[in-house]
Image (cartoon, rainbow, N blue to C red; front, side, top):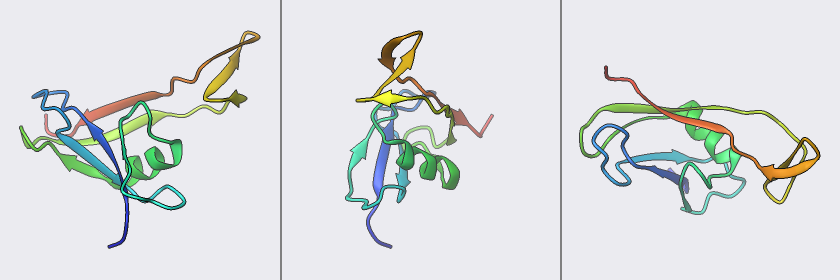
Length: 99
């Protein structure tokens, strides 16, 4: 099975802290690193969003990741916008598949 990284997310329905775990082998060398949606590298997000649907450990509803990616000139996690460096905030969503 090998090593993987995890993206931990609070359930948007039942609010269970770290109720969702999306696993990813998208990093060059996955090392069982734990991330949140806010700090996960894009390569980890991409692989987790494409491959996995997970169930909440609390409410048992199914979820998957969706996000919008746009490429900008960046420096230190910030992007150039209107001549100033601002934080790069990609749109990241957790979508419930059990409605």
